Structure formats: C-alpha cells, structure tokens
Image: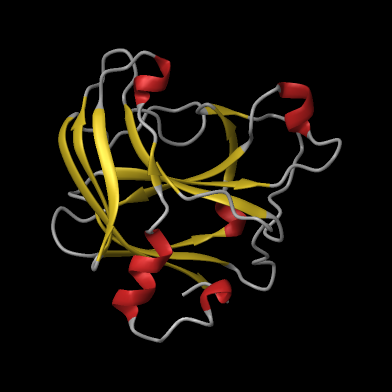
Length: 190
C-alpha cells in the first residue's frame, strides 16, 4: 500500500478498490487505432479487458488520475506489482512533475519512465521494478538527453500492453486479440 493510503483500513480488498477507483482507459484510438478496451476497479484490483488490434496503433492501457500534489517516494527503492497478465509482456510507465525548465518544455511531450513487465501465463506474477531500472521515453522512443528519474515528484502511473517495449524497441511478448489483465496491487518497497 502506498504511503498516501495510510489512513485506509488494512483490508487489502478495500485498499485495492480505493487505489484504482479513478483509473481511466487510454487506447490507440487517440492516434487512429482500432483497439477497444476498458478498465474498472473490482474487489480484486484493476481489470483491463477488451480487444487489441495491432494495425494502426497497437496498444491498450489504463492510467491513474493525476496525483496532486505529486507523490514523494524518494525514501523507497522501487515499486512492486502483483498482477495477472496472461503471459504477456506489459509495460509500466511513470510520469513525474516536470521542473520549470525541464526537457518536456523543449520537446513538447511528457517524458515517461518505463519498465517492461513479463508475466506468467496463468496465475499471479509478482515483480519488483527498481527506480534505477526505469528508462525515459517519449511516445515509445528513447530520450537521449542526460536526465534522471525523480521519485519525489510522481504525478501518474500507467499500465500498458503495447507492440512497443523498452524505448525504441518492439515488445517480444506482444499479442493482439482479446485481452484481460488484472493489476491486483502496486506497493512501494525499500
């Protein structure tokens, strides 16, 4: 459970449902694709399901609301995800608040810090994502500027299944077709 949910009861189902209540879907239709998926909070976490079509786009995703104020996880080493992913390689992305004169101002798009997340074909996958392993990307392309991830100013999380994996590379675990992914929890770890 995140530090900002400390005031919630310790019941995991309640905290998972609360944690994902305001997440929304973002699919490749924003760029002319044809994938259709939706997400919603359940008693078991966040459910992302629908149909993924590679032509014209090739991604489905769910993203958190914007955190205001930004979340400060600078005391932690990374995030631990628990999810059911059908053996797909997913991508987890984090957006941070840009500094007044940050690289985003020059490039016109948000930098997202990404990590590939391989999952088991069935059952639960538990994976740790160290902050030190995150790579900067803008629309799946690598950022070649010397920038560092800032865990003290996290503004959004996003879970994707995309034909693109790490910045500038195709996702070797990409599968089009029907998709049903459940993100059970996100926790910060020391």
